[in-house]
Image 1 (tube, rainbow, N blue to C red):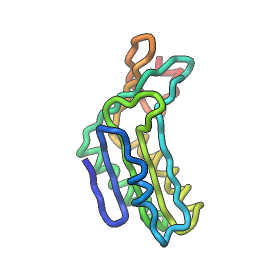
Image 2 (image 1 turned 90 degrees about the vertical axis):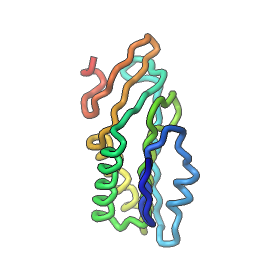
Image 3 (image 1 turned 60 degrees about the vertical axis):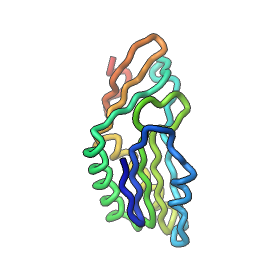
Amino acid sequence: MEYRSSTVWLRLLHEPLPIAEAVSFLQVPEAGGLSLFLGTTRRWTDQRETLSLFYEAYEAMALGEMRRLADEACRQWPVCRLCLWHRLDEVPVCEISVLVGVATPHRAEAFAACRFLIDTLKRQVPIWKRETLSDGQNIWVEEGIPEAKRR
């Protein structure tokens, strides 16, 4: 599922994220700064070994909320281009689950908008994450709650 305009590209994908496509979309002559954040599945969380993460979403609602976040970023910063992509289903260790890219005239704006987008996406967009651990446990993760307190 996706939304695309001349400046904003939002995607929910069930396969690996095509990073080169995002970078190509973000490169425009007006932009002097391009900030790209890639979130990956890490192996260790609070001394527990993670094998993979599984993401699911109410896709229509998630895409709508992603549009609101993109609109807010475009109001706060002089965004030339913006990508906000999230992978759904299973994401093994070292693979990319989320891509946030922002192109602006200057680097400080690109960094700030990118940080706002990833932080707000994790808090507000209805995408749920389940960790599959090496001991066979499957744990649903609640954003904003430290890992050590979730046990």
